[in-house]
Image (cartoon, rainbow, N blue to C red; front, side):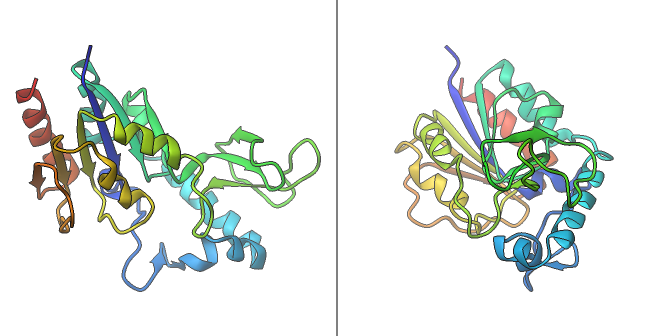
Length: 230
């Protein structure tokens, strides 16, 4: 039986593909205040702005391709039972060939009903005001906005607790609850952290290997470390 490798990925693994998802220190995302485009309040205030913002992100996603970091994670399935927990809303892990991907913050290529959260559709074109479910309710991006519950969190916690190895790739560990997952890793399992600007991880009682590099470079080193452990 293959050992379970659980991987938490963030914006850093997709940035090399051209996905601009970082929020800078003044709270802007692609020139927009995140409170205007990534909160329920922003949706209530100006749904057209929110729809346009995600339409632009969706168009951008359809123009980019997975990078070496994504590919290495997919390749590791040959040796490990790999489960990816991603904060990213793109589908680059899936397109690279990863078969077990859990999206904490939703998916850009899906939409859902504003009244029925279980009514979810695949969606690759622009989403416009007036696009509705079968009952006439407006559709919205299938994104977990700030202030909303994270439906996939319990599944992510369960995976983390079952890990034989845990890796964090391309995230500053600043966005909760995703950043808190590392605290639920089994005691003493190896933990790896790949990021060009790694932060300190307080209260971690696991053996930690920090790889201060961009995802594609760091993933090559991570793969070597992991293969030496089996």
